[in-house]
Image (tube, rainbow, N blue to C red; front, side, top):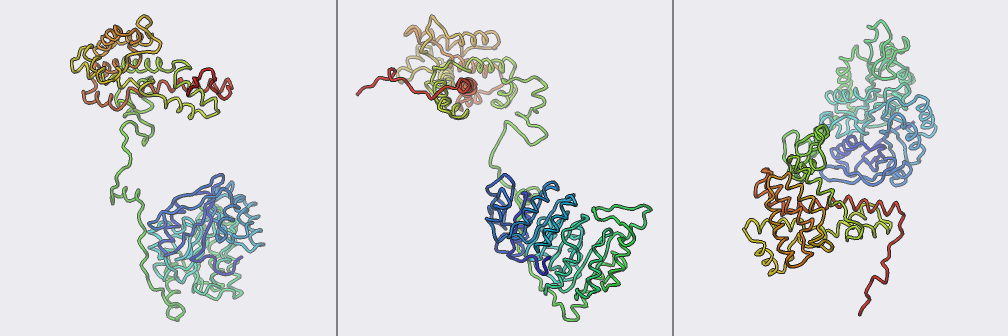
Length: 608
């Protein structure tokens, strides 16, 4: 066991099993103490590597993350404290790995319930190698103004109130982490504060004992008096009794053993800690208190008198000139986290993203205000979901059915069209699904599948301005613009696109009005008089019919309709639909295990 000071203002630790809050509390403590370097050198997260962003004062820093104990110790050879936040299942193995590293001196084990056999192995190894274990079942320890372990002493407000940002004159040791926080406050009220405080942990076999730390404190010149808070159960306090009797401790010790109320119960009582269970008269709080008193410790008559006893002992040392009370300093202000400040109403911060279509903050996600459970329970289809997420309202069933028909009809158009061809070539090159899909989607534009918006835009403008089909087509011709939605490489006036006929048939049956579609048909009649391939294609049919859907449903204003067409909603339908087919082509090529595609020479015109 170490015989002197465990920590200093330059002590750095490795933190096992990343927990944001205790690490940030350590860094806030560092800043309050005026440390120049953060006390956490690295984080160990099994199976993960990289960095974690945290705050050191107002500055954001990146702390390295390592996947193994060995890698972390090699990367940070000056870090000699290992703070273990692993669960009780893995705490022993990871702690032993740390103890075996030559750079590690102190291991703090936070977990409760570590198997006693494992704990005994850790203790034996640590003692034979002159290393220190704090815990298991501990909150840790603190050297005021220098270093603290994890959540020791709680929030930064409590640390300031307990004057832990600068060293005092009192060494404190306890089994209980919770009572340690209470005692830090008590000691700060009646003395100049603590120099070092340790919670050894409440398990039956602590890695270090009360007397281990009292003997250490006795060798630290800055510690002028010691305070001990024990508890019933076990015989740890008797090792301190022996040390006092043998004269190994020459500084005042103020002690109290909690659990005197146990005698009020008729049967044996198990208190909060695993070790807080009296196994006989010697393990009772009364017997321990009496033994400590007989050995020379200052032991009050009750816990209520504990504070007064500490105060009286401190004041005597001041009168004797053995303690010069520490001059008070004001710690720097710890910047408040933005989230905390917002919740308390101290600040307001602008948001970075606006979302009006979905919300995942409640018990279940909502699409345009409709809970996911309602979507499922009411039998919503894909068209209904699109109406919520794209148009932010529940459209009538004939509208959502039309959307679904468009998706089905446009899902695929064979392997020879440019989008499918690109996807097939990419898939055969061994690329993944997303790469293959995107290569096909990137071909969508004015010449392939991307004319729905333009068709809707031009048909709407011409109809709303009252242009005849002749005036519309000829004006487009003068501008050198092909009429979007008119023309097909294969289909002719005597071989119409079946998809167009199906869409028109559905609309005439279910839509309240098909004025834009009828206008598109009139335009087709005129263009067919010029060439037999200038038929209304599927882009033109969807574009004109979507105008009828938007106008005829009575759920959109003129401004909203113009905006929908301008933004590109209608092309979105083709992108969504064709993604189904492109994914299918990717799977098809993968399933067929097709080799790398090479275009045949005979299909290329080589010319100068």
